[in-house]
Length: 414
Image 1 (spheres, rainbow, N blue to C red):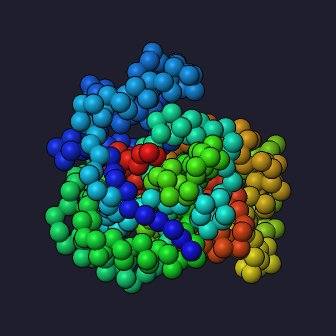
Image 2: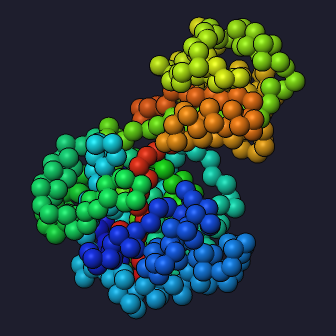
């Protein structure tokens, strides 16, 4: 059963939250972070992307960069830009995008739940990326950024969220990207106990976004447990920072592909070969969006095409085989283009749907790419079914938006 607890959050004062809060470390590069933090010493980027305090070109994995993160984290606390709550709390964190709001509960999730598979994943992680975030957690002795979980819809927790959010939020602002962020502190002991007991009834939680951060946070907690001869399991390091949302509120958007060449084929030959496994219909120069599962949009030489997978080319009873990312990876990218490793092949790149299908057109029209492929988004039901069966999704399958803002609350490990 899922074990969660409230915690003493380290948070910015209300009047500083917009200066402190940032996008997650992994959605922008060092130069973009440097530009966003310019003139703002309170920006969380000084902790999560501390290479911005060095000259451009600095190796972000150098020891002095990690040391700077620790020094900056200390400055933030000494200057009271981050202040720790006196009591343990759960928190509600809501996000608004395009008029739609999703409400999550900020929890301290349990390390053993991850290590023993009760916190379920649907993606493989890379050890180098895990190690980078593990260093960050270790040296700061804190989970500075939250991970993004989903849980099966729960009427009691829905009522808790409804009750809390009738009150005035602690934070309420619109970030520069236009997304709204709203944050409440749960003071009621009765509601706190309800949250703990309802999560305890759940057999599983699901990682929606942040697989590397989740692995890093859990592995550091596990290390600390092994290193402590007096370990009891109740120490703060046995928990890590997460925001958990009801699954029905989350929206996965498309994650699309752009490819550099046609593997020696002419466009006409490529289209002809696609006919074996797909019904191919030309749609003209106006952007075409995939209409349903197993329908794809192809952009090639200034024209959009609808590709519909023919019956018999996929297996709807197989949680991985039914995915459009599997169909396109096998029948188009592997069989026709010769791309077998999506993680490492330099002939392919991936474009999150938040950028729109116009970005696909731009990448092809510029001559950088030969064609683009847009996919119908995966559903939360598919994601949870894959996690429940112990399967792993192919790379670059899901894109969640909006991303969690970092810096609204931090979890210290002591």
